[in-house]
Image (cartoon, rainbow, N blue to C red):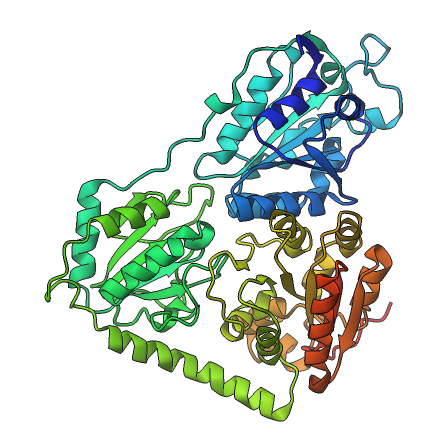
Length: 575
C-alpha cells in the first residue's frame, strides 16, 4: 500500500510484527478497523485472525496465556472506556505475570457536528467521553499512548510491541478515536525487524564467580523460584546445577514447572520449611520468596535476589534485605554458571550433602502422603484425592493449569509433573484467569491435552458463559475440574489467621458460602455445548474424569464438578 487509513496501518503493522491473533470485543469505535480487516479478507489476507470474545476478561486472559506459552505477544481490541474497564483484573494479571500483550481501545469521537469522518452520531459517543481513559489501566501497563495522526501509526505499533517484549515484559495500551482511525496518509517505510526487544541481560562475571564460590562453600544451599521454568530449556539446566551442588529447590506459588516434582532435590512449595539452617538462599524469578511474618532467613545466611526486576519496582511496599541483588535473565545466568564450573575435583561442591537434602525433602513429603492415604482409605473427596486420581488419568505431556487458589498447593503435591512446559498458573491475584487462560494455552498447543483445575469461586470469576462460547466457537476444548467446596476458602483462611476463635470463626459467619448450589457443568453446556457431570462420591470420580478426558480428546469441552466437604454452613442474612 502507498496510502492507507490509520486503521489499515494498525492492522498491517501488527501483522508485519508477527502478531497472529486479535482477541476482540468490537464496539462503535471500531468501524474503520472492521473495514480494514474485511478489506484484508477480500484481498486474501487472513492474518491476524480475529477471535471474538463475548467478554474482555476472556480476551486478555487468553492473550496472556498464549504469550506465556509461546513468548509471542498478541493483540486485544476493546471498546472505549467501558471495554477497557471490563478488562478488570486481567490487566493486573498480565502485568504481575510479566507477559507481553498489545491492548488497543478506541476513544469516543472528538468532533460533534460532522466536521470530520467518524464524528459523533449516537448518544453513547457523549457518555463514553472519559476525562482520562488511560487512567483505568495506566498503573498496570508499561506504556500508554494515543494515535494522534495516521502518519506514524506503524512506528507506534512497533514501539508498543518492542516495549511489551522487553524485560521485564508487560502489557501496553494504545488508543485511537474514530476520526484518526479513518484518516488516510502515505504508508511509512517501517521495518518491524528493527524493533527488537532489549537483549537479555547476563550477570557481571565477578558476581557469577562469587555465586559459584558461595555454592561451593554452602552446606545447606536452597534455591527458591516461581517462574524460572517460563523458558522450558532452563529446567534441565537447573537440574544440572542442583545436582552438582546438592542444591534444594523450592517452587513457591509456581507459575511454571521449574524443577521436576519427583526429583530428590525438590523441596516442595513452602520455603519456610527449609529456611531454618540454610546458609545460602538464592531467590531467582520469584516475587515474594518467603513471608517475613512467618519465618526469616538465619542472620548468617547469605541471600541472593536475581531476576529481571529484582527490586519489584512496580510494587510500592516491598522489602527483602539481601547481600546481592542482580538484574539478570535467569536462563542466561544458568548458562553462565554452568559454563563457569571448573572441572570436577573432590573438594568442589562437596560442602552440601545431597543425601541430607534428599532425606530432608523426603521428610517434607511424608505428611502429604499420610494425608492422601487417609483420604483414599476413607474414600473422601478432597483436593488431595482428586489431584491424585487426575494424576492417574492424564499422561506426561498433558498440560495442567492450576487456579485452585487455596487448594493450589495441595494440587501440586498430589499431581506431580516432570516435563517442562506442563504447568501453568497465574502470578497475578485476580481470580478467573484460567477460563480464558486455558483457551490461550490450547491455542498455542492445539495438539496437547489441557486440564484446568479451579475452585468454585474461580469458576464464577472466569466468566464461564464467555469462556465456553469461545471454546466451542473456535474448537478449543479443555477439561475443567471444579473443586467445589461451597465458597471462598482463601477468605475464610485469612479471617482465621487474623481472628481465630473470635466472633466470625466461632459462629460460622464468614460470608463466603456459595452453598454448592450452582450447576457448573450446566453453565458450560448452555454456553458452549460442553459435556459435564457432577461427582458426589469418590467411587465415581475416576470414571467421570476418564469420560471428560475422552470428550476433550474428541473435540468437545468438558467440565467435571467435584463436591468436596463444604467450608461453611452459614445461613443467608434475611432480606
